[in-house]
Image 1 (cartoon, helix red, strand yellow):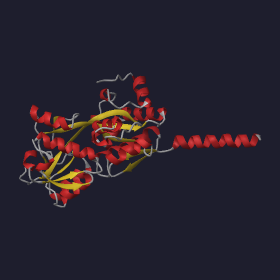
Image 2 (cartoon, helix red, strand yellow):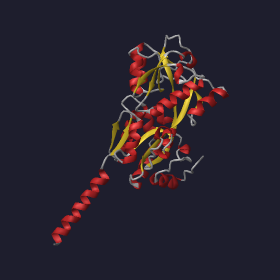
Image 3 (cartoon, one colour):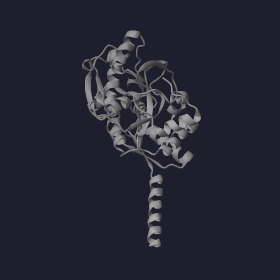
Image 4 (cartoon, one colour):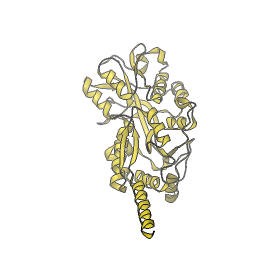
Length: 318
């Protein structure tokens, strides 16, 4: 009997150890997208700084990935603040489908997005896209369609003012542009897929957006968290040859509520304390501002993230 009890105890300990050692599943969009590159950089930091194994698991888009985190099939992911809020509350593109098992870990940094065309195209502004072919639809990434509608609204356009080339996701949108089936495509600046398009067509150019109050108001009616700011030229930003006014919005890292508190506390620690190494892997992480990580939100923060912020005296902000 004692041997049986001892064997059972050893078995339980083995299963507990296996659970602790189970890799973190990081949900992302396809290779070449921002979320994929963020996930790859973070997975590397988790392994090197904390010994936590993590696997990047790409899907066709965030509209597919977010519910997988909610169900626990994936542990965490990266999305913009608007999409996370809509998913948790069951509004917007997630209308009637609240994802109540989502928890925020931290607001990361602003993402700069815009519409680009071929460098030699006669199209000089977003308003010039009227009647032109543009990648649209984004059935696997519905929030991208909303963001694009906001960019068009900034120039006084609606989706009906352009010729829509229907695509399921961002990567396919760029592919249609490169193949010549679309005159313009939408993407985040500085990403691998944008560099690929730049090389494939002999140069691209992002279109400037307007910062006049009326234009910004029209954009924010569709994308409330967005704002206009200036992007400066840089070697890693193809398509930005001069200071460019364009749409910005914040990105957030989030997790399933059932992910163990202690593990998320360590994950948050890696996010904050490995900023330099994360920035070497992905330049976007260089803009991470610790003072903005813990912010008021419609989405509750994970207990593990709150524990870390409390321990380090990082106050919640508006």
